[in-house]
Length: 407
Image 1 (cartoon, rainbow, N blue to C red):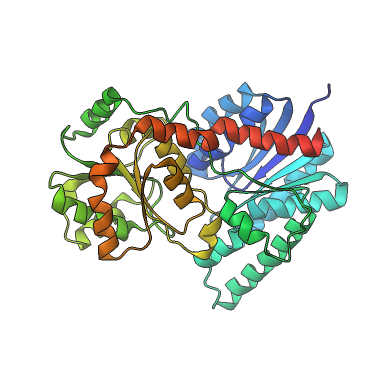
Image 2 (tube, rainbow, N blue to C red; image 1 turned 90 degrees about the vertical axis):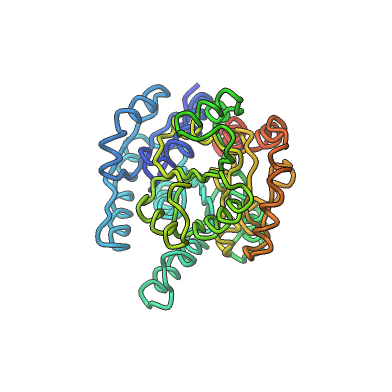
């Protein structure tokens, strides 16, 4: 049987941590079901030079063709339009050469190209919208009181309408996001819309054992009896560092030996500056970068993981990858409401405490729940979340969409 050929377009790089956790594992899994992939991605120079050999090896294992274009960083925003033009040119050239059965577009910049190829060549258009990208930019870095950013925002909202009206398949990350989106006039009610959250590789993020916890603490130089709170991921824009530090300060009052581990690729000096500004001892913070392989080793040293994300409109459609990863390791969490399906996930799994707001009373309530959180059954936490958020189930969900379009 002739293999179905798919061009996967992404503005995120495969050498980025996101590419290695939320793009490549899915496509390697789908390739095993008989799909022939070409991935066109945009790579940041430093990460590309450091990680290109690994990605070449991983893609070759599944007979995936990888085409990498350079990611432009200057000038801001304008460079994105330049990259979009380069994506369109390269994608069209690849399609003329390979005659793809479907264009799988990750988010909006890629979707512009997918829509163009559908209209010109009749190829199937798979809009993997993820979240409300234009609204995320508006909530984050695009100040729409500036006429230029308002123009760009309005442009992408109009494009969003066209993507949704013309897509052969839409994928969104959360049920909350889907419910909101289905109220929009731009959504054709007969367009297939699937909810596929950010999943975790449960074979990589395995259940935490006592031996692994002790090993992680030995590597970090942390007393076995100390309460260790952890945070995993980026700092800035959406992630509420000040509020997480405020919670830790309150934890420190009750648990005097507590330490806060932060694994991040964000600016470490900036985080220490914020800690110092709150008159907390930097000795109580362990802030470091970690590779994908190192993340579970260090996070497994922790007793509780916290993650606060701004509950903005665009976050209705967000599915934090870190939540699936941490819960797969059986570690209880303290999180906030107003972000995708987070409250429902944590509540149903009985996996932690959900803050409704960030006032002193709510933070103190979170501290008071710590003894109960420490008693939660880690195996039950893992089993509850892996039913929906395992990488295997994510691949099967995408497979069902693929079969409907190009079986």
